[in-house]
Length: 321
Image (cartoon, rainbow, N blue to C red; front, side):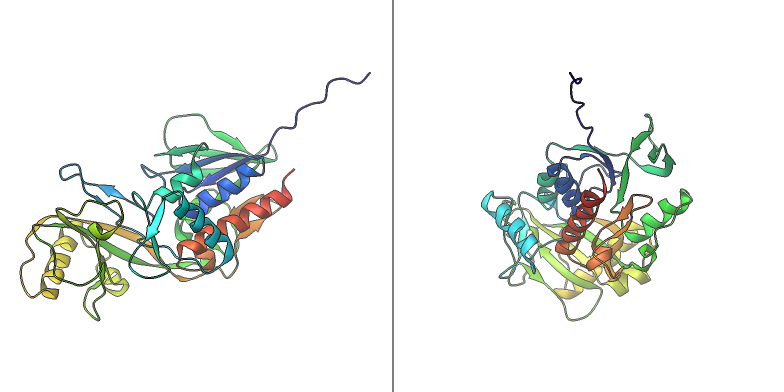
């Protein structure tokens, strides 16, 4: 008689970055039977699909990405599922949706039930036992994996690779424009029609009415202001206080006078909008079992990050035992 069959041990995959690309890759790999651990230095998953809650007013601001839309079948099906379950709803224009109750909801849904570790900074990658060892800045043991997926913005991925003495050709091609964001609470509603104001010129690229989004409180009046890429580049290293003052003045100019601001807070997105892509759905080195995915591969859309994550997951599924 033969002995009892040994149970197969699922391949262990580390994903660095808990935005849309990392989340879509993690879900696809998990559904294929892989063991997945997701690491992110932020306090919550979402990446640039971010939300910040103000403790004093109780208001929340989607101070990063604002809307989603689908061009292809994979993301169209994903949006349909989320809409059916109340995680997204129409906003601003036909074909566009926003998340409910905030922009982190879709990423949280993809990561539900998975090993997700936030406030955990991966500082180095090292080859070990035909696999990988991840070194974390925070206290804790190094983790070992069969493959590593990077879904950080390209420049951040490059820094991690360089710190580890590694290279992944193509990552350096991804370039980004910054964006300064202002989370603004006003004593009265600002007088513009519709959900979004997009000025033709000046420092402000868009002003989003938070209260017009599904499931958000309508009072007090809350807005997210995004500066233009050019203005953000010029003021990239300014202090948040200086940017706050400048954007408040710019918003006041739009409406011809004081805007009765109650509270305002600036946030810098150093890598906000993809300008040049890697030129491929994802990057993968089968010898190292090291890959890169994100909107830096396919373009400045949430759908691009989602589809890039799926593409890299499929490469790993085909390659790993």
